[in-house]
Length: 150
Length: 244
Image (cartoon, rainbow over all chains, first blue to last red; front, side):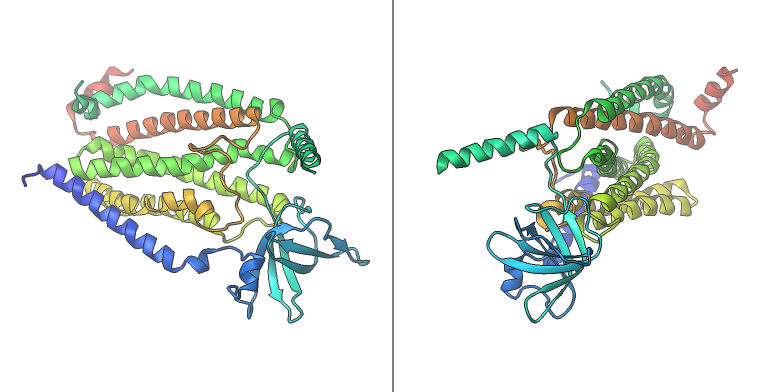
């Protein structure tokens, strides 16, 4: 098949980039478990997390689970992925977005008693941006739906 | 229309000179409008309060950082295949602006991350791949600067450009492929944006302003490069003698 030299060159460039792309995809796939930033409580329960060293767990702060200790700095809460829940203890300053029902990522070690002792707590923000009025309108609409369902 | 006509440096130079003021003016107007919407019209966010307003800078900068790299790779591929001088000039002219937007995205992200997440920096897939993008920009510029012969410098830079372009989809999809601390995208081509209307408008106008700014500075940088490289030619002499 006769190709113009510049077309052959372009085809070669495309081929090289595509090959590199496949190679990178395979490498990333192989390192998949090292690229995750956190493990969910379900993954921890299934033994997928490296519990022998420090790791991160992520999920939602369970509603009604936040307890502040008398020292004013220590907080106990539970991280849930709606299937499994893990209790967490943390001493330190919490980020502004740390709230019940919102996303959280905690780094620390899992104790033998199943309590996760966190050394750092990060709030995970979601992709929803709206004014407070819209947020409360959505909340009311959901409540209304729940009452209808009941 | 003959594309080769516009690919000739002697046509490009005066044409770019005429276009630059228009793009610069558009960039200025859009920035003023975008920032006004962002800071005075757009409502407060229900979770983040006023801190979310960083998105009017952060998101356009992050978009541009990825887009400019793709455009650079495009010009590099064209340059390698067709051996057109102007393609390499364009690829070179875009690099500093791309690096600047990458730095702005990382920096504003850190400023936002501390109050919202509780950390300036985390090594999650999104942040790490964006940092690699900054290193790629710096690497391409350093490589081009390190080689004296401009033709060889162009080719080496173009190769690194093309290899690095693989990082762009990794950045873009990192938040869906892996669980990251960085949130997913609020705006995508496939579904409705999860963002209030005025916030979205402010962000899109700022993104457009970033485009116009990029075109203006890239064209003016390309003009300088063309002048430098074609300094021995007749048209440059005529051009410069024509000026007072």
